[in-house]
Image (cartoon, rainbow, N blue to C red; front, side):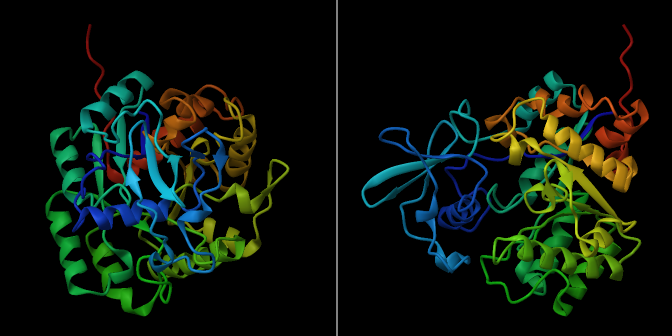
Length: 368
């Protein structure tokens, strides 16, 4: 059973997509692309640029976002204007003429790539996703497991706790937790004492937690490590509750010359029994390495050797990943090309581990 632990459906980004306004949605999107793995271009002549004009140096909160008439374009582009010059970040695939991904589109992609089931993640840039993820899961329960999402920096508020309860009643089966608190500043982290009732509720509802760690506020290895250690303290408080480290260890900080060089204090967190690690390289490195990503294969070998196949789960970040490779290629660099993995290890990484997390059943083979 092949399960993609990291995929998305979403409404047309020209709208508010569940947020209180379209302006709020655009703020989330602008923040996402201040330091993207995606490429950015000047519209006039296609010259590649760095989108540093989107934010003020030294302020990595929403308050530091520059007014550049940020907007959703076509062909997968997020567009903006700076000093009378138009630019865009190629954030989604060029072939995405409108930035929208309905459930049926993702199912068509899954069928072609040979993916049986997808975990629907969320995040503010995609929208306030609880209702839409629940809709997709309700329409196709055999294909999708939806995660809920809240404004994490406000997780001590009664309104946020109530939204968790509402999303759970909608049938959502896990939590997507983005650790970037840029909308509200960086005074608190995931393990702050004020968030204890929130985490107690998540544990009580038995919702697996998919945590996407950032390197904010400093955007460097020290920033990432600080956030990872905060997660480690949370894992210790709830040692029986399952967590997934979305996107896994960052090769940009913890790998040199194709080999992992993970600090001992980080290894201690990654090795905790209640933490799974996502295997997902094309979305961040597909613009640097060529398919079938031999560099990524060596890093996967290192993850297997350090942590064991029982701690690894495969994800794609579909449809975003198709700006670098096809959905099938984002799977096949592991499925077909990681020859050092046994068949049993591939089964665990490509589906069985995350299927066990949610109690998913293998699809019944159709008789001819």
